[in-house]
Amino acid sequence: MAARAIAFTVTGFFVLGAVVAMLSAAGSPTAGKTLAIVILSAPLVMLLLAGASRLIARREPAGREPGARPQQTALNEQARTFLFIAGFAALCVVVLVVHAELRAETGFADAVAWIVLLAFVASVPVGLVVLFGLMLVPTAQLWLRSIAGPRKDFFRGALHITKCEFSEATQAYDRYRPDFPDDSRGTLGNAYILAVEGRYDEALRDTHRAVLLERRPETFDLRGRLLFRAGALVEALADGEAALALNPRLAAARDLVGALLVTARLLDRAIDLMESGGLSQTTAASRFALAEAYRLRGDHDLARKYYAQAAKLAPFYVKFDPRRSEGLWACALAELGRWEEADRHIQHTLGRNASDTTALYARALHEKEMGDLDALEQTLKEMLVASLGLEVVGVLTDPQFTPLLDEKRFRELLAWALGAQRQARERVLAQ
Image 1: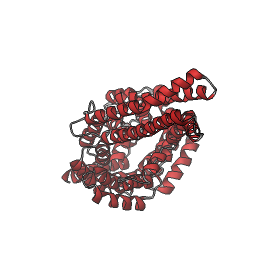
Image 2: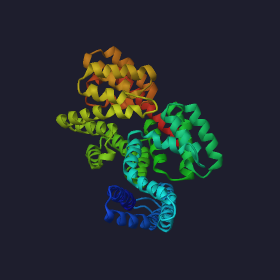
Image 3: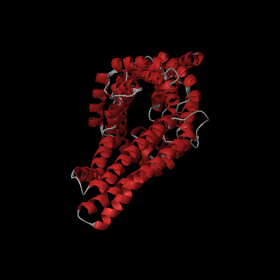
Image 4: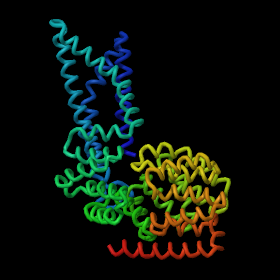
């Protein structure tokens, strides 16, 4: 809340300055005097905001464990920005003083003073353009920070990931880690790339190293997802809850915990968690998990409502998924009975990655609907290979699919899946 108050203060200050500058430019003498006061106070205001940012950065954020301060770097950078603005404002004050002393002798100071005035007039529209640009193009901040600075290689790696340039991202992280050996983000970035490439055991080892270096919520989230895939549900849930404790606003961690609770059939807890998240935690995955919880609880009207929300949100998330998976989108459409649309997304996804388990699950839903049990059996076998058993166990214990267990071949498939899940869990826990 304090950081947000600082942001509102900065915005309000510059809006006030711009409005007064516009009135002054229109010829208002009162506005001209007010503008002088605003400009004269700018250095002091910015110095106070810089001090406030530093003070907040030193304090332990509420609800976080000691030693875990993921906001500190951002707040310190914010403080440096305010110091820069304070210096610029002080320069403006000097220009105004010079203008007041010399305006009877030269026109140069007049020109400089008008430049300062026009800068204030332009501050709001230019600021809004920059603000909305950063909001509408999430990678813009990564691009800006990857240009220069001591940590530019880290941001270059993150930017390459958004473009699916994993080899270049790995090279950037390899350059970053030796310079900042105590920063876990380089190791975490490399673990993420390994996970995307399907090298899950190596990714899990890197997340262990990253946790030892630094307790970041993103690290617990990624390790939780890797443990979830291996069927270590208790351990994955512990990591997901640790990530949420460190950063209650981390939407990915909330999605992970919600999916784990649904998988464990702790439906009331899953619903409470998913519905307690604010707008910033509303994602396609969270809406899908909420829909699954309501469906399993028997509330099909609410389930359809949230499947529809997941389908509407999914296109945005596909754009920023390094794997460009449309599997979740296809699953939501399949649950809504929109089979033609679902099939299109299934084909797109499996064309890129034949082992995408969400797309395979959507295909299984369609094959069950069509009554093509031979094709469904083959799809479940593909899921068994891709998911180490967990997905197949989830499917065959789901009320939508449990009638299949009347047939011996599906009972045998469930037994194989349970065995594969147990072996995968034992292997990852041994690490």
